Every structure is written in structure tokens, then in C-alpha cells.
Image 1 (cartoon, one colour):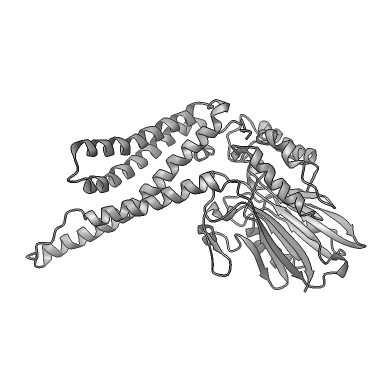
Image 2 (image 1 turned 180 degrees about the vertical axis):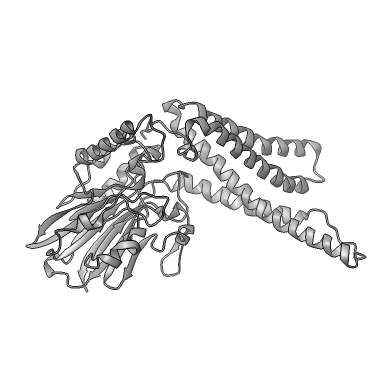
Length: 431
């Protein structure tokens, strides 16, 4: 299995100016230590009655984690970690994140216990305390906290080991009003959010390309976030993604990460050069990059329009480079309009308000949070649904549809739990 060798820096430091990174690291360390001291109470309670050697072992194991986390943070602040250790560094940072996510769960249970003890203490001051209530920390709740904290430790570790390259094909048949019979059965494969800079291994990514080409698609759409930050992240993957084939071509748009907004550049010109290289990468791959423009295709004698916009989000923290009015102009007489727009919040913000002749929109961006529960016919839940109404799969309003791709790659946490990386296969049908 080929290991990818790319420069990488902890994702939580990407937007922090270089001269402020140490200050940020110190603040983060203080917060982490506060959590550590609070959670350590549970371990002290549980180990009461244990031998001194056992207590010492638990103490050393517990406090070695924050020490190790701080060392990793210093490496991220002050060094460009050697390229050949990139995969190891990603995994170690992920493990630290997982451990602190588990500690946070323990802290929530301890907080419930502290509230209980505070309430009983207040009751004892103003009421009859003759019952002899024990206000010491509950051993049971401490054990319960550690047990609950082990759940994210186990699930997130499993998701990191098993699921980052476990691609799943999702299929939908979309019934479109007034679709010409000549276009019925048109097969579109959509991928999104590759985030090439997050990949540790190269060979497993080729499996996704095999899944795409096995569908013999008429069209392939890529809906943004080719990289995390820099165009150079694609260097090792050009000979992978240039193998994608479609009868009528591969079409693409940019996502919020493709503009290089989350990294510190030496100059504005350097950032612009990176964007120009991104545009060239799409051309080299053989993809038709649509930047607030459209492409008309004649398929079986029927003219359809593929419209693509730059990133446009309804949320203020993401850029609004998209100009749908400009991209849409000139498509009025086409029988079918398909839109590629990275951020699904664009759909409610503009598409189904002002452009109701766009039958189907393709988006990505959410990754399904890379965490959730999906059991078809029973439950579909992820924390990201509290930010985005449309976050994974197919949605409909009136005669318009949007399909939100769960993403092919990952960013931040190098894994997935419950929400697998996706290759979407959309087949058009007459309503």
C-alpha cells in the first residue's frame, strides 16, 4: 500500500496567524488541563482502595496524555514535520482528539454528580440533615462516567481504522417533471469533498475510481473541496483522479477549501497563484471546471444545461463567490437544468426562491459530519442537521430536488462513524 507524503499541519492551527500560534497553543493547553484535572477526580474515586502501585500506574497513564498532546502541539506550531512521518502524525493527533472527546463525556457525568452534591448540600443547610446523606463523590457515577467516556474512544478509533476508505455507493432515482423521454435513464455519478491533503494512503483511493467507472456513467459531477488548503496536495493523486471516465464528460466546481482561505500565505499574490494552480489542476484532470458559468450539452437530440457556481453559502463564515444569475443566463431554452453548487445552504437561499427552473441541484460540503446514524427506513441523524436542513441524500421542494453528497474524503478527524464516504449514482426518470 502506497503511503502519501505531503506536508501537513494540525487542522485546528490552520487559521491562526503564525505569530499568534504559541498564544493559541497555551490557551488550548490551559483548557485541556482544566478538563484533565476535573476528569481525574473520577479516576481518583474509582481507584480508592486499590494498591499504591495500581494507583501510580493509573496516574502516570492519565497524565502522560496531556504531556504528549502538548508536545504534538509544539511540533505543529514550530515545525514542518518530516514528510515521511505525515501519516503517523495525523493518526497521533487524531488519537489525542479521541481521548479528549472521551474525557469530555466523563466530565459531563461528573458535572451531573456535582450538581447533585450541591443540591444536597444546600438542602442540608436549610433542612433536616439528620439523614446522614453522604456528600462525597459518587463511586457509581464516576464509574458510569468512565464507561460512557469509553464509547467515543472505541467508536471513533474504529471509525478511524476501518472507515476512511470504505466507500459506499448510494443510489437514487429522481423523477423530474416534464423530463423528455430522450433523457430518461440518464445516469449521473456525483462525488464531492475529496480533501486530498487528508489522505494518508493512495492505493485505497483507487477503489473509489473503480466504483465510479464500473457504473459507466453518462456524466460525472464533482462538487468542490478538492484539497484542504493548497493545490500541491493533489500532486500524488493526479494519476488517480484523471482515470475517471464519463460518456459526456466530467464537470466540477470549487468548494470553500479550494480558495486557500484556511492557511497563512506569504502574500496575496501567493494565494492567487495557488488558486490559479487549482484551476489548472481541473483542466489537467480533464474536468470541465464551471466558475459561474454553464455548459450546454446535446444528448439524444435534447439540449440540457449544466450550471456551475463558485462557492456560495448562506452562512456568514463561508465565502459567497457564486453568481448564479450570471451562470444561469442563456440557459432559458434548455429542456433540463442541472446545478453544481458546493454548499447546500445555497439551495434555500437562492435556488428554489429565484431559479425554479433548475430541476436538480448537486451539493456536498457537510460530509454528513463524518459522524451519525443511518439505518434506511428507520433513522437518519447527524449533528450537522442542526446547521443544515439538507445535509445528506435527496431532498425535494415542489418540483425541485437537491442531492447532498456525504463526501469522498475526510478533513480534521481522519475517519468516519456511521456516515461512510460516498459515491452517488443518480438516475433521471419522468415524473
